[in-house]
Length: 316
Ligand SMILES: [Ca+2]
Ligand SMILES: [Ca+2]
Ligand SMILES: [Ca+2]
Image (cartoon, rainbow, N blue to C red; front, side):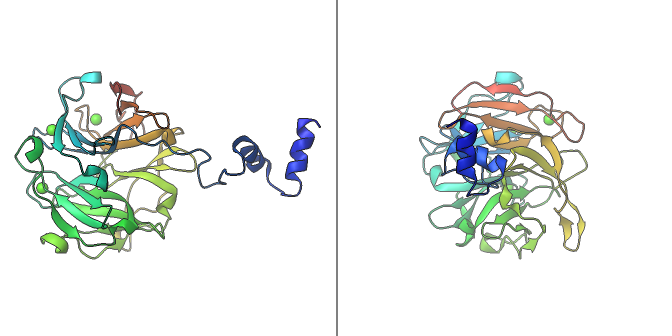
């Protein structure tokens, strides 16, 4: 039987559209229809949970990342060089146990002028603040403080709102509904720090992944968010517009990358080349392999990057 007949025989009773049929033939019956990706997203065997903040207080954004194999948290200090010298020698700032944390994000939540780290403990769903200190090495972060009890495993895509220069608020997506919320910072300590959440979008954010704070990517001021559309692999910048609850994220987004961002296992936004405009650093890796770290410098056009530059040669 010629191939075309076999295809018709297979498809006739199912009544599938050609694109779906080709996808089924290519990947077998286990393949998901849209909006799920037809291939698995890359795992992170090297470094994961990339976040950016200034943790050595020199005014330059550094990179933090968790080593998957050990659970250690490392600081990659911004150096003065370019390319492979963009970051200096990494420093261990958290021993083991960071594999038990998820949804890391960075902002000054306690208002002392130093960046802090916020993360969810997978086992309990508790939200913890790790305050930035003037210490170094394993003293870079102080003793953690509980700022949210239970339930945070039901939230995804935590992203600090560092846009107004005072204490950071927090964006998060409710996993079962895809709703985007903003939690204001009350200025109070502990579990009173985050106030009553406000829904800030009418769209469903479950179709997006790798949501990170972009501050003022286009220099118009924040808060702005960068995320990857899972279905298409496109990278988008979302800017707030005025709405009933203040700033709303209902716009279509500006396309920063036309495709391929599902092949990026993680990224973090910050100014990494010193021109004051927000850039991205991103890990490109094949599934189940460690990858390379790339810098995507903001091109100043309010919606794009210069060509990427390799800044980490392996192990990512
Ligand atoms: Ca720094
Ligand atoms: Ca702080
Ligand atoms: Ca920059």
